[in-house]
Image (cartoon, rainbow, N blue to C red; front, top):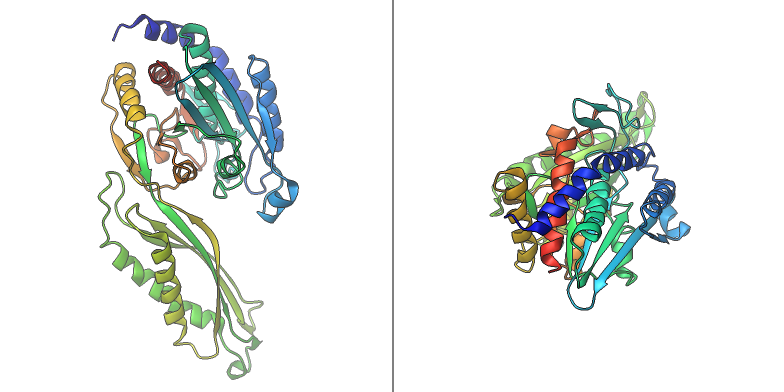
Length: 410
């Protein structure tokens, strides 16, 4: 594969790799903890850095009232558009800047972007500010070393993945601000993800009647009812383990009880208990049927507790990403160059995570997940202490993306 275009792209990326790393360091040093989700300052800094490289970013602030209603503080999404000529596809590259708070246990400053032994440490260094860098420098390499004659590339840098993406890519798409023909989204260096799980999150509140612990018969114990519900929910996981997905990389659906709140004091019979449930859906499942089944299970478990009233609120419904055939050009280009650059076959697979890619899929955009992020989430400590990125992976993934864009744009 000694095409002079690819050699020129690789050489440009090697020559500018130190600048790519510095760009990523600047992005990591601006916190984007979500919650609280005050992410407009990061978008502003990103736009400034892009402008310094000759890339003008359109700023698309989401109205403050919408952001507050969503439980966040500020969101400005960015789009960079580069049109090369008439005809040809519009290829979008999407990465998200928001990330969970750093938490405890770090041995490196989570916002220091420190480099040790070829790894860059910091919150979002792997997922997914790394692909702000890989996508930006792949586009720059394409312009400088293998200028296409047709088609367009768009960079979509968004800030709502942790809360479901509706005010990130979902907002850009629903407002008609972009209509790409293909999408490459931030993901994993050593695999091309073509399908992912969905997620249903419910808030279940059990209402009883609080009373003094000295007179328990005068109350209705919501926590006692919650223990019956928890038993039913965990037994339900045994049923879900029998529902196997046919997608490589995805096993079966499962349910997690992620948060429990209840009671007011040690000497008071709990009058209210709140549970937050996370039900992961394999691509073969119908989200409406999944929600109906889970609501029925909760209602059935609570009926055995006299005097308990149950309230169920949907917090999130993220659709699964189904395997596609229309994304074949993306898959073939990334596999071809992934093998050439990494020296190994890059497989396709699904992932049990859910991502913003489903929102593009819902608008009919063929998509894959591929980028400079971790070989696996656990290996990079993504969303855990000491998250890091192997810099050589950043270099090589940038080359793969630039080469694939050159092919797709002819």
